[in-house]
Length: 173
Image 1 (cartoon, one colour):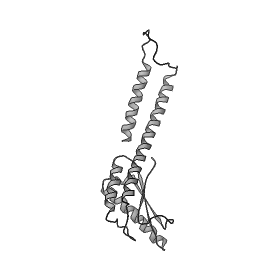
Image 2: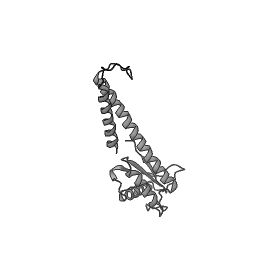
Image 3: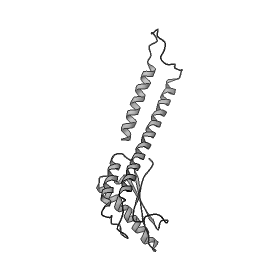
Image 4: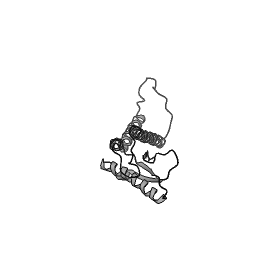
């Protein structure tokens, strides 16, 4: 998708450069716009800079849209686990499908963070990792390329974190 946007912007920039370089000085009519003298390389550099800024803005907008879709799905029905296990609870499937649909609409990468608590720090870390991987596996089963997913398990997170739910963050490109 990003290639399509960038290609379209590049084509438009090239067309504008071509049109800017063509003028008919034989007309007696007043010029429509005032132009300044600049070299072709200055115009090309300006066009490239403009295309890069536009492409960057489009990528950021796509990333934000994906994050908003994921946030909405998780807010409606959080992805959660049966207490003390890495088994997704019965209603998580709906949210996994919604997250997968948001992921398929773009090419963003995500990080899945899962949590667990236990007096044995190593056991908590293992369960948290298993939970994050369970969500990654469910998304992969829905057709999301696993290279777009990173996982993080956090043992004994700070107070206020629901250890039986995951957080999904769209990563910056």
